[in-house]
Amino acid sequence: MSEIMAGINFRAMTWMFNVRDLLRPRIDILGKVDFEKGETVLDYGCGPGGYTFPAADLVGPEGKVYAQDIQPLAVDRIRDLAKKRGYDNICTRLSDRDTGLEDGSVDKVLLFDVYHDLADPEGVLGEIHRVLREGGKLLFSDHHLRDGDIRKELTGGNAFLLERSDGGLYVFGKKTTGSTP
Image 1 (cartoon, rainbow, N blue to C red):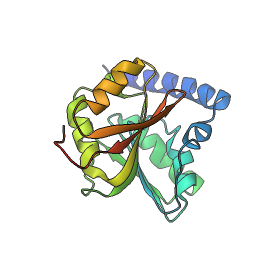
Image 2 (cartoon, one colour):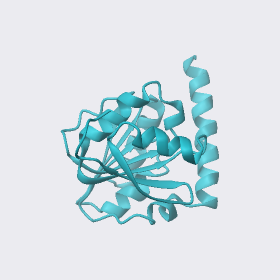
Image 3 (tube, helix red, strand yellow):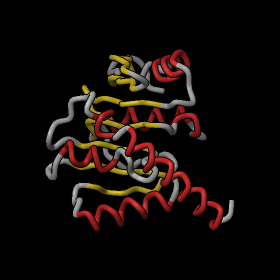
Image 4 (spheres, rainbow, N blue to C red):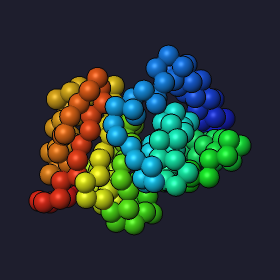
């Protein structure tokens, strides 16, 4: 896809997500899970940042949010908005899978509306498992997948246990025994 088409597609997606976020603010979704000040969050496949900024507010300035995406326009947008809005606790990463983060360094991973589009879902889940600390949570939503498929995909590799689901939001805990994906 040409850079021009990628830019047009990204701007259209951003516009649609902005409308979505006005109708159903992302903070309302994240508010269904306990976030602590000072936590570290990885927003994997962050897109234009609909979840990134509310997560940064929830963990406060003493926390950290890593916003990672494969799309350079997404990473550039979040970096620019974070600087403009004074969010010193947001760090962007451009990558299709590897995070570059240390083992067990993340308290929560956000994996929203991207799983269906991953080229290497098993590899991504392995990377998420690696960076998630013991007791950490994987927050998941993907409206392209059915409930049974979500449960099977994320718990089938022995890395995550479903703790609860609430209106399309799934909360998985890191499984610390058994094999990783």
